[in-house]
Length: 298
Image (cartoon, rainbow, N blue to C red; front, side, top):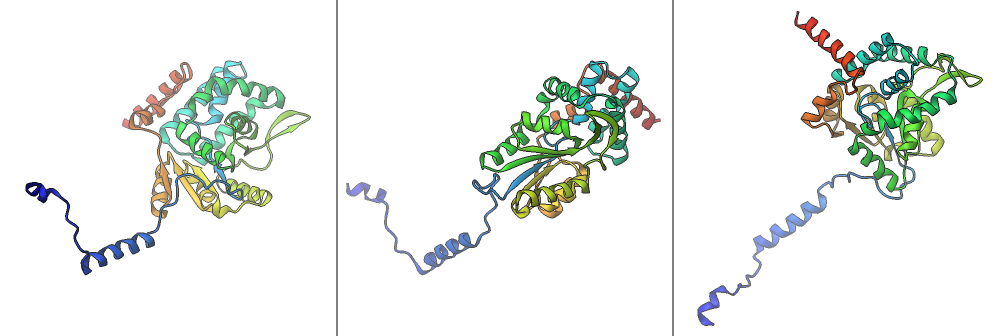
């Protein structure tokens, strides 16, 4: 045993320097600011989450997918289809919302639904969701929403999409509800006009603020999620803003302000998102995008 005595660990007395080092490390650990958890605190009923829809929860724009479904059901003709397809291609390739462009999209949609019954389009919307939207939900964003639900918090979609479409999607995802653009209807029939203005940009922030008052929420404890710099007013309202799949302006703003940033688009996936997905619609939109690229090169 004597020959192996050197293998036995020796107890060393703590020196003054080692004691000082240990105490300093413990004090530093106690004072170090702990990062906030990724997921909401369970049981905080005065907190809620607000999610933008297009490119945040769903790849592409809900209104475009809805238009594809209506074309399939002969609500409009090939000329309008080409217009919708180009608008979808622009939205995907640009990766950002343009106010004038989105106004043109809404004008197209309102002219298409004018004269149709609200309940008719709601029923059709259920079918269109299954056909074109269900497979385009970002799993990562869906998981974030579920985390809030699991913590006992309410989760709302806040979108410029029609409120009927937004409410349908929220219900399918098991969310609390939705705030969306309201199209005017008389006796259950769409008139082709809006009530007020689209729920876009600052209007989203006002809607969230009003809902927070009605629901007795503390916005400092709430979270908001969006891909677009247009939603900076909404994101700035809450204590926990997240940039999801952000456009370039929001990415810069998020980094400058220390906001959390998540991008679920891998390089290959992001490239695919930039291309129209549907046969037929994709062919028209792809041709339009190619023509635009050729014009730019010329």
